[in-house]
Amino acid sequence: MKNLNLLWLILLVAIPSLTWAKEGISLTLIPPTTITNKVDLDIRAGLKNEENRFKKIELSIYHQTENPKNLLHYSKKEIAPGGSFEVKHVLPTTNLVGKNTIVLVVKDGGKTYRESKEIDVISSDIRSTRLIDGAWAGIYHWSETEGKHWNADIKKMTDDQWREMVRGMHKLKMDIVVIQEVFRNEEYVGKHQTTVENYKGQAFYPSKLYEGRMPIAANDPIEAILSEADRLNMHVFLGVGMFAWFDFTSESLEWHKKVAQELWDKYGHHRSFYGFYVSEESGGNLDNWEQTEGKRIQRKKEIVDFFREFKAYCNSIAPAKPVMLATNSMQVPTGLDTYPGLLQNLDILCPFGFARMPEGDLTGKESADLLQSLCDTAGAHLWFDLETFLFNEDQSLYPRPMDEIIRDLNLFQNFEKILCYQFPGVFNDPKMSIRVGEKRTLDLFKDYQEYLQKITAKTLPHSLHRK
Image (cartoon, rainbow, N blue to C red; front, side, top):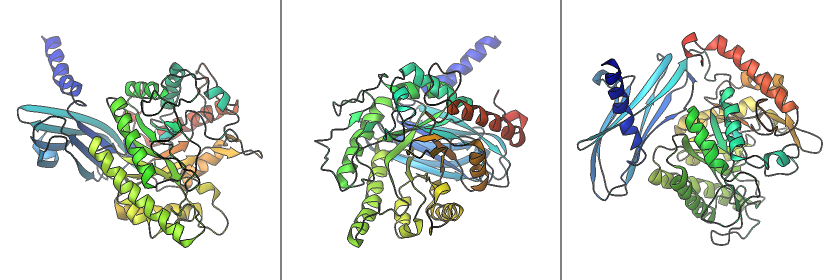
């Protein structure tokens, strides 16, 4: 009888999950993995009406258990056919140290759908966990010069070897994967004539939008990464790009919408599909180094308009999925007139370059503090794109010494999440069947693994340690 009751309980929980994606209902936590109790948890619930009828739904969000005393949010909504909406609830975590479960319940007439997600909160005197929580995964480095030591290897990786790489990231608790880009097109804003129609970029996946394919061994590395991340309960940003570097023009916007739609149609069923990453990047000044005042104003207006429209579009097809952009950390004061407008429609800003600030600029710490204040005011999230590489004299990249990485992990204490650039070619799991890059990548993997074990032993309660 006990076995029958257990089977019934499993079915009761599992059946709604099987129809979850079909019903257009999603639950997202920002950040998605372990946080300190100095970071508020941003809970997003998204609903999209995929049916040809109006839906009257009731939506409830609970903390820990589905109990009235644990209710965080309740609302009623009528959704037109094809319509969508997003609910946001911010939960302070000061007194929530330990394991936490967020439960979403959606009632649609006689149907009830449930989804839950867990997150660990650790006690700390700072916002950061002092750990690298994820990493970029460029499927083929954009620069043959910078990627000199690994491009020839990464080009040979099969779908199964991309799955191995995801498992290697998971061993280091780098459970957030950022796919750098899904198309390759080496153009720059203002220096090309590319349109949606004549786009000549090459895809890293079997796209139906454009014929060009990158010459790599893997058939669909994106599917491989997502499917393995599903199995390991990891989170993947899909890099919507590359149209052209630093290009946020209206033509680029339309291209990004088309690609985002195809990515969602093709891969949106994966549990690990966490959000959209816009690959184009930007200078911290947000004017992308234009030489005239008129052009600088134009670029700033373009980036604000782009994210207002792109975020709204992503919400219409995949509500509750965050949008992220990586900028560099330099000349941020020049962009102070633009950041408020940008951050209103950008869920996560993930800047890089704090360790190599130019002379006369702010220090890395000052830039980080300024960006944090801008994000706090706008209600956006500030993550850290930690550079785990250094430049050789020929500008090729090599793994950064572990002591320098530890220094940055301790210096920059305000970031709620730390990701690094990048895993392939910089870190290598010794268990992988292929080594991507030079031998020092194996050393960095082992060095960080030792650091991880020391830090988690100090900061995580025994009950939260990974088994």
